[in-house]
Length: 119
Image 1 (cartoon, helix red, strand yellow):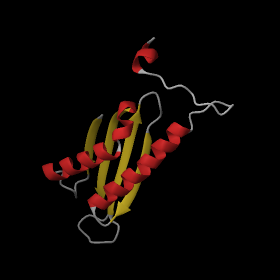
Image 2: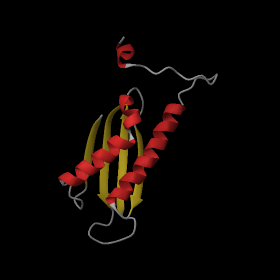
Image 3: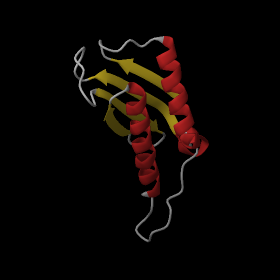
Image 4: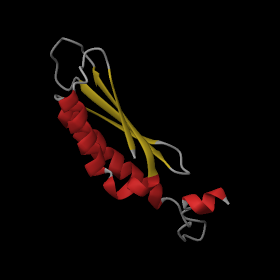
């Protein structure tokens, strides 16, 4: 899974931040790794240099094979809390999306492997 991190002009994407966010994403989404192609994390300081509660925003979009992208967002007082909150919501959203793959009779729809999809 490829993890991309984008920040606005108020947040500096220094190496420790990028490593911390990347590690959190990989840890939280490791059970979905075979189905994920790319995860994009957007970090934004809503109020810029002004201090305000819950002004750090994280939006995470997960690209799943053979599915539409799934995204989640969270606002918190720190970047780390915003990332954790968005990851928790994203895990629930992916679980829900993957659980919905059932036919009209309620049977699970088989998942395509890369080899089967190419045939």
